[in-house]
Amino acid sequence: MGIDKIEEFKSKIKERMTESISNKIQFLEEVDNISKAAQVIIESYKKGGKVISCGNGGSAADAQHLTAELVNKFKLDRKPLAAISLTVDTSVLTSWGNDQDFSKVFERQVEAHGKPEDVLIAISTSGNSKNVLIACEKAREMGLKIISLSGKDGGKLKELSDVNINSRAQVTERIQECHLIAYHIICEIVEAEMAELEGGEGVGEEVELSEREVNLESVNRNINNVQESESFEMI
Image 1: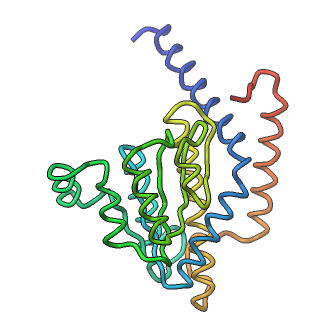
Image 2: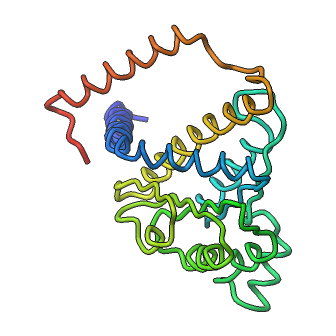
Image 3: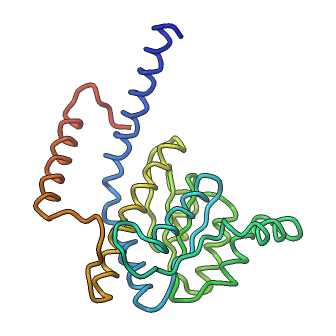
């Protein structure tokens, strides 16, 4: 492979990384909503509720990913947290999708599993995925709290949500990257709080506070440097 082609690859990599960093800096405007989402989930768990999640394609993978973090562990060794993803039961999905209506494959499962004390996490990069919207309508009807992860302008999903976490990025993969950091942070906060409520802080990968403070100062410094750079444009 020629040198010119390799340099083209490197240029593309830097461009995409720069886009991703820019979108994440912009995503800092969602800090309050991410915090609210964590609080909603904690309150649900205190009441004996669970987290139900859904999405399509990459968002289905995200729904399964966050479910695994809650049921198994994120950073702490602790009791499992109740969570299910509506994207994993192929028999339910294909039978209802084939015999009835694919747009209602998540709604059917919300109706089957949902309780008023539960939380539905609905993920759609467009904010307009029909089967996700219909699931939210059912969840609202049943009294569940709805947390959504969306992109662009938030779509119709934003209006159906108790808490909407929205990435204003315009490209699907950049939106998904923001969703990933959002639910990782949510899982970390929820896990730590529930472990503490259970009578211990859990055992895991937590670092000393002084080290956390140093890391945070370093991150803030880097963010400021990036924002002040004339060659870095906010997306």
